[in-house]
Image 1 (cartoon, rainbow, N blue to C red):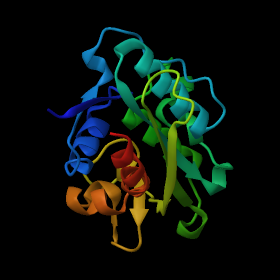
Image 2 (image 1 turned 180 degrees about the vertical axis):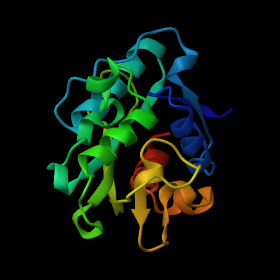
Image 3 (image 1 turned 30 degrees about the vertical axis):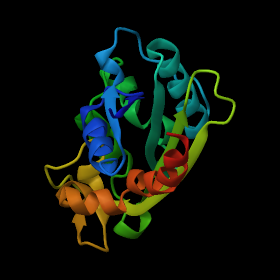
Length: 203
């Protein structure tokens, strides 16, 4: 019987990615939205802090081991913003109802007038695995994926800022990459490759 691990997220895009990326392990990834409890309050000041907060919260409320992913986009011209606030970047202009579209629109507005070589950015991902809520030695892995912010959205795949994240190496946006390619090179895929060997030893 597969080990069940709760993903401390209700994002269906992330859930799909994790299930695909972990197919080689005898695990079943379930979303925390399958359980009846409120999301964690992400009041950390870094991706690492927020990932630990989310993993511990999921363990406490499900009794299962948990994987938390805290990731976001860092744009050099914006001094690293939106950073840990990537998912709610446009809360200030949407009355706290940020969506992928509103976040992307705000980012394009913030970078209006900048040339391509002034739009360098990277996705950053921190993964935390906790066996239980009081696990004193959580597994922590992190990785980043460099690109730049395109002048306009392109592509229908992926989620979040993928339509704006341009990859010179592939001459397309992240949202135009085949899923099999994205799952080899993304920030999440890189972090998970670091996590997998350690995770295998703990299962």
